[in-house]
Length: 315
Image 1 (cartoon, rainbow, N blue to C red):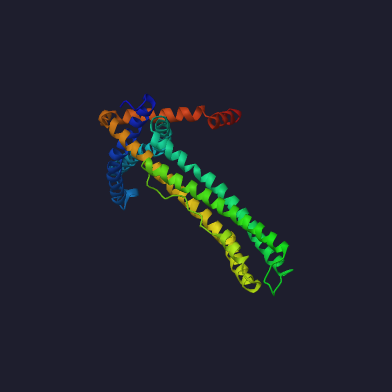
Image 2: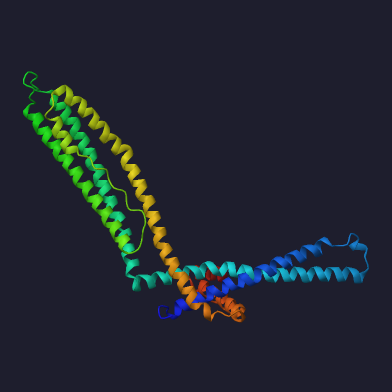
């Protein structure tokens, strides 16, 4: 119990009594509902003309059955109203405990935040692919101008355009390496801290710089074919590949978030086990009533509660 401060312990006890109350009330409520239906179905056909004693006897049984069901139903409704609020409060407290006491949890949260860095890489990668495609279109056009077919030599302007395209390709490949480094680092951090979850997607290795360099050594006719293939590939990557990678990263983020949340839930179960010896059914009714009072009082002191009070006072 050393890991639990008093606030978290109290909340866990309240949650346990709410769960116990539901377990106690639900079968009784179901039984009493069945009894009420039986009373209702046994309503005498000639009730309006029956004797006073018989009529009162039936209406008394019906009223008792209805009141019993109402009380039980109200009890269950109290549990249903209170439990989500208590669970939220517990989750917030356990989150604080894990952040303060569990290095693995903190490291996993830090690793998950690397998705933001990866997305920024993807954005830069998209911009660089766009610029690279433009440079390919430019060098393809310039290559036709001043090309000497006899010697198969490109003009000086074309050579410069090839150099710019190769530089643009190198920038693309540099961003790919950086994004993939982030993906690998995130995966390493998660695994080292016990989280075997999906890593961020890896950007495809391209080899664009080598490809452009190879094109620069080809005759113009062959070069034009290679330009068309390369430009088609970069356009597809920009238009469909990058959105797909972004979607994959979003799915990974959800998966990782679920895995980290499961870690919190496992800690929650452990804490529940720690308070279990202190839960006695005889305390359940009073504890649930106290929990309801606490939540009502808290709601009244909230901003919304004060606004509602103000509105009521004006009326």
